[in-house]
Image (cartoon, rainbow, N blue to C red; front, side, top):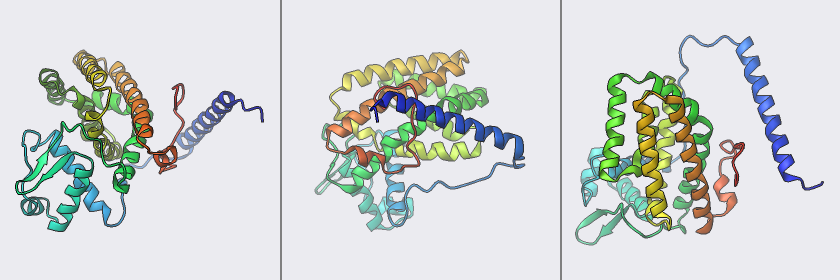
Length: 294
């Protein structure tokens, strides 16, 4: 009634925190954990888009971090359809989705060109683009809420070889100027080595949804800021991992994600995606304490 929104927000968060703590306490005292980890499948998409969108994410990974990252053109539809065991029509639909994100470009008479440095904005008029960018936006919140514990637990369990491999990737990013991918490597690390099986599954999905947002970077007006922030992040993460300061490392990951979260929100709103479109999944939306602009 008094429109005291700050007090309302703090009261709601306190209630949420108290309720969650009481629920965890009850579960801990009264429920015996299962002997093994219970598997589950987190399905992001349903129906026909499942194959197309999942394949799109796989190709985005291959374009930016995999076998196509140094390739100017993708193989033919027919060759990729055989490789990924889908129909040619599914392959065409997948490439069409990626072209609307400006990740690739069809060149008449030549093929499909990889264009990671495109300055064009994605086709925001396309429902598939708007839906998947909304999922990309929401996944930021999942990372912010979970990465501190997930990253720390993962780093503590890394073998010397796994730790060395991660450090090599971060150092290569610094040498090659590809620091934009350092956060991706952290997410991949959690998806591969998190001690909890469910955590690995969740972070593999989080990493995939995070890929939808990369084409936004090259059309962003704050490219210089992003490059500097990525470089500082990479240096700080590499130093902390090298010195086994894993708790500090996980806090750096969370802080970087929060900074990117606010800029992603402003960018999407400025390009006509409405606030309600960014909240397609109420179950994902949770209050993030202590952060302005949320």
